[in-house]
Length: 374
Image 1 (cartoon, rainbow, N blue to C red):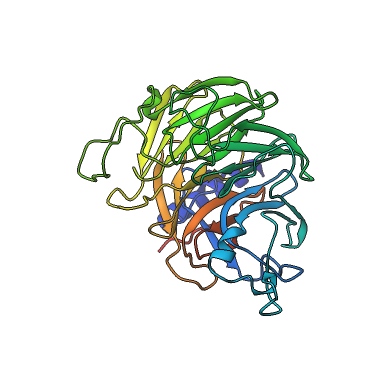
Image 2: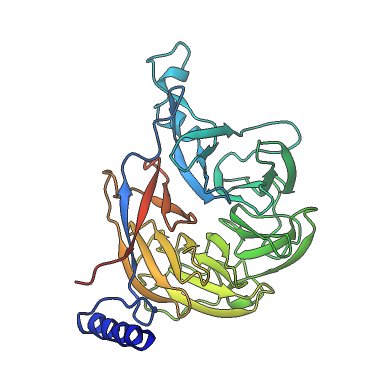
């Protein structure tokens, strides 16, 4: 019986190869396939409305966390119920940090100015760490701080100071940080720093003590203006602002989005350069490398990159940084993107995306297995 089973298994693999279908052993890989869930999240309570969504993360419970910019609603005169007197029954700005359950229901919401910390004027980036702490950054003018809160919004730590910056080689001050990630092995926080500075900087996540920093290719960062991005020029030796996102894979590799240079660079945790990949190299203006996250399998086989200029989610095979495909296009219907900004993946492989500027939404894309071969 065993010999017969082996024979039929071999026959099945041969047939799969003959018809161009992906093999279960992973020798032939295909990009994952996703379908939008147009009913996720559920309608927000209390006449809430989202501003620009500038950060998405998924915690260990598969709860989805977002940070958005309530202030952008006032700028666009959308929060009519918040005017004095109210001009309409809808709407008011939702609190900046929102936790959604797996079904899209609001679990809790909090955030904004408070005692003992400096809430950013322009929120940017969110990360829920292995201890259930919630980190928020600020990327606006004068926002040179990252904040750490407990799950219920209790303030715990601030790194950097609003209105104070010292360049890309200062060891305590930041420069419009864009994103954060915490290493569960060392309890260190990595900051993509940022819209002003051109580096990754690492601190102790408990005390905020400085550990190390580096620029592109692991070199000492340089704040000199590199000029506009040129797709015909050699790969620049420095990051361009913004250094937009940072994520740490389970194998210890650190992935950094150098947005305007259209590239993702990979490092060891000590800053030693490993590799890089360029996404859509002819993309100009705001670039193609906005945010990244990993598939949830043990090897984290796939790397997802969101591209807010071309409005795509790119799928790469992480080991060799090989682009397998992309999905998405510009538009406002479910499954389309308008100012795609952030991405996070849950334990089932589902993708969650956030849209900034006037996109103002979070969407869920359900994992449907390998994409069909054409």
